[in-house]
Length: 308
Image (cartoon, rainbow, N blue to C red; front, side):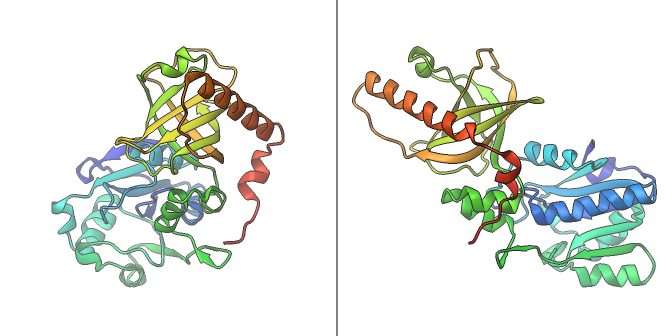
């Protein structure tokens, strides 16, 4: 996927099929829009383009970092992603100017795919209704998508953030259509875990939303390789401490990027009196995680329904 940073660097592409949105989390509702756009671009031999914004226009903590978001968008087969820096200058652009100067003149959109509740432009005056008025005038074709619900609950990035912060991983992963995860670079830790015999990779989560403190059974994606492990999270201090012990893995991965997918919370953080007590507890955690993964079906896990 080609990533373009900034409006000024955009050039014309063949028959652009454009998706508009922040797409924080790239959840099930987002995927419905993006997948449909990719499919349409193939049908008309055009170019699928996602337009996203960074930082978040509403100044919220994001589910995923920009790099994590781009990674997931690329996995959906999108050809081009345009990242618009949402600053005070961009925020002053009116919705109509954005449509005329950006979507029509600069990109030359053939199709625009967007959720019915998407708002854009100065004071969020832009809406699906405004886009439809331009589509009716023949500037482009517009495809609108209704809000997606699970168990009667609207899927939204805001609600998913709340689920993750309260350890409701099953509900969150159904709305995401993938496990809750963080993506970051391996950084230097204090080395205590290695001295105890359980080496860990310490991750900088880039201010992504992460579950509460505790120990989690997890899956680790390193490049195209997949591993299982046990992850420790502590939010006692800032920044949050996040480290993962990868099972049956002994390579140095310092400064490499990896994704940690949280499968199940095993226990809360405990205050222990000695290293010996900690070693026994870590062994117990590892055995608990291994038993869990011996019966683990990723397909069942991701798609199994739930009640809110």
